[in-house]
Length: 193
Image (cartoon, rainbow, N blue to C red; front, side, top):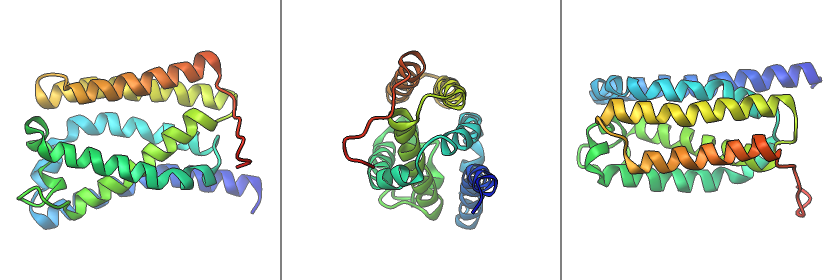
């Protein structure tokens, strides 16, 4: 595959992943009769859509193999996050379409969200620690910082306050992306990956 075709494919994947995630979440929540709760989360989708340009830029700057290697870790972190949401009274009202009515299992929409979130965690982690110095990396870092701060707005809009867990996510992502910008963390790997 030529370089132009590879770049076009990465851009298409970067756009199709979040779009299909939202589409399938809507379809599955509609089938389950929980699409009203899905639509109430539109305040959060503002932040989520900011990940589209980040995903495209990040996919153009990292090794897909590294992302794939980190997907199991991303899925584990995503699963833990989803379980914490199910137990948190502030989140319960805004994530009903992610779970069965008893909050014991993920719904189909919740499973799609877990998979997409796991991929994003793997991509962000790979980007922070392996993306080489380049203008694209600088732009992607700025988009990632903007995404992090948009979580604050979404958290406040959904819960009428900023939840501590959201604040931790914002601080972590912002600090790592800012460090990436300031120090231009170079790619070094003793594993030869």
